[in-house]
Image (cartoon, rainbow, N blue to C red; front, top):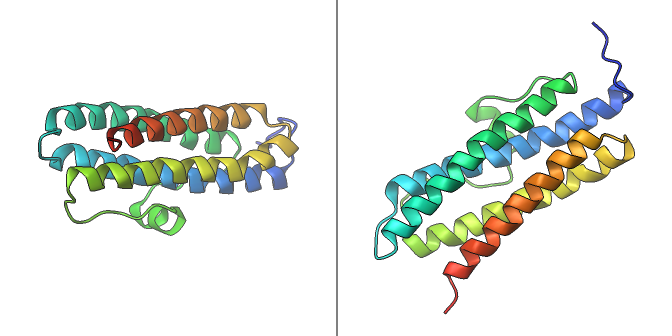
Length: 156
């Protein structure tokens, strides 16, 4: 059945492509955070283990929301590691870095997600796609705050 939500097919496709990159970044950051939750060690173990758990739980909900928005726009959501690797701006981590390096990588990851969301925002704005604009705003807010909190751990 034809989609008639007041956004052209071309605009929906462009927004969905941008959201697919956001989804890949979100999922890669989720996986990295979960990895670090499992493998963190050192004096900040308890603090970081619990914090990383909160972050990956929030991220699990976020990837679902982004994927569902892509589907609502009528496009398929990427859902494989191969697709995420091709679309993501975030590098995977295959080693086990020290706790402070984990924090640095996560700060960089959260900031990367914010930049990706910001790149998609004009497409949503131009199409008067308020649901996508709202989703992007929420994601930017969460990631900016999380990056700030993680950066705070590295001060002093």
